[in-house]
Length: 100
Image (cartoon, rainbow, N blue to C red; front, side):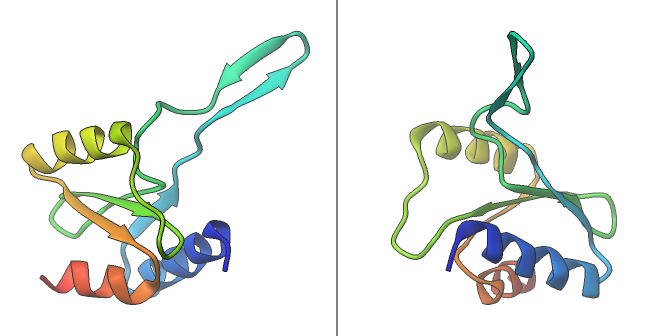
C-alpha cells in the first residue's frame, strides 16, 4: 500500500470523527523557470486541529519505514509545545494514538 493511500484512509477516518485535518503538501515544483517550495521539510504529512484547539500532526509511513532526522526533530519540537503527534502506518495507529 502506498503512503498516499494510507494518508487518504487516515483523512477519511479523521473526517468521520469530526476532526478537521488536511494533507500538508511538501517538496517543490517547477513553475516556469522558478522552483516553488510547497512546505517546510520535516513537518508531518497530515496536520489538523483536535477538539479544544490542540494541534494534531500525523507522520505517515509505509510499514518498515523510519522517520528522517528532520522529521524526528520537527515532531519533537511540536510535541514539546503541546501538540498531539502520531506516527502511523495505518488508520489503527491513528485511532490508538488519539485514544491514549
